[in-house]
Length: 548
Image 1 (cartoon, one colour):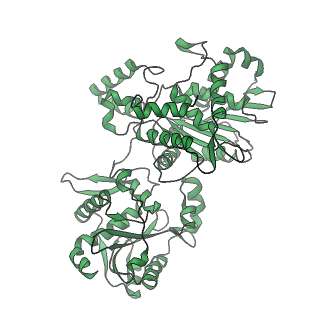
Image 2 (cartoon, helix red, strand yellow; image 1 turned 90 degrees about the vertical axis):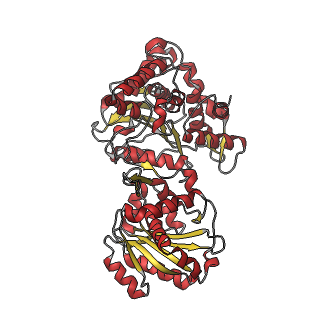
Image 3 (cartoon, rainbow, N blue to C red; image 1 turned 180 degrees about the vertical axis):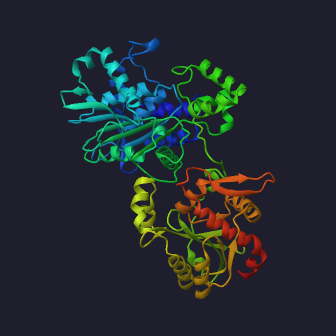
């Protein structure tokens, strides 16, 4: 039985309602099964083994189903199938090494993970397997461990095979063990993890816990790290970083063949009052999770705003973010490309958004085809060389791949050297004869760079006040042009990422300015640089067209 295809069929037919990102992910998985391409293939037998293990050996330990054999829901079977069924066709090792399973509370996540933990402990053919349930506090980490131990107690076969020791469950056949760990468990060094389950990722403030457990898997051939969580209210933590990364992978903004994002969530805040949409964040609604209970919570929240935040965050996975999204992924995606050679000898409008060390620095050339009035965008980005490795590892951003593709350049040391930005504009002028008639920039901290640019020959430097009065109309024009696919940005993934991070803040007069819509570690500098160029386009449109 292929549970991924069965699940996708129910999604496609509308029988099962899921979030846009879950739909996207399972569509991709189903297509790969039907038309296998590349390095990885789907092995149905491998996919079904952990499911058969669970439904044969594991029993419910609590509630009305206590003592009964586990019967997994279809969404759970599809998830397990994806996690275990895709393998490297040459090495036969698992494709997916890390997953984020994002789901509303009371959807059976602890029970599911206990089953996976027991499988990884006893049946994954790993000698000396070390399986860990991890959380900030030991009590939280022990929830999954205790669930697994209770299952063992209910199952004669597992009870016979496993031994409960003081701190762990021990499988003597392969010298493997399962233990609950936390930040306060003492030293976490020296671990050799085969499987790590991080429970309630949203509650972990310290990124180091994730990094230590991730590094502990480096000696294993096919390790598995599972992050399972509801939404949270703590910002600028590991949860924000990993959630954003999972979204980017699910949306196709980043490519990571070893990371599986399964994100059950409402697609918009307004859906919380629409019962037909609740399943998006609660795939077990009506079975594991009681519909009546959720209905009562919603009624209470409607009558008492104090209860609203909790239900939005925990039951519907709506994060407490700082702004509203500006454009959809569909709006900003344009896979068209062009060659700068076709604009040899043309004028452009320049844009720049400068940073010192933390943010990206971005320079833009905005070009127009006079006949079609289609816009073409060339950009370059800079980060400090000393920070690239940290950003790749900690922020889970592919700066190294962007650097290899020539989309990002490195400045020596730990700060941005604005001379490198100047050099790029000179390079564009010398290589392609593309000269910016005007260059628009954020006036903040740009004095010395402006003087250097003028001394180099770029005399038309225009400072942009970063406020609604200046930016609102150009931002509206930019948004409309992106939606109309009038902007060819050479399918630049860095700009697409920046655009996806861009939120909008509106004042009482309807004027808008860009803000970061996600975690502050995410960047919108490419958007800001392009928007500055659009200020120039707005101010000089007729003049610019005539000059082409």
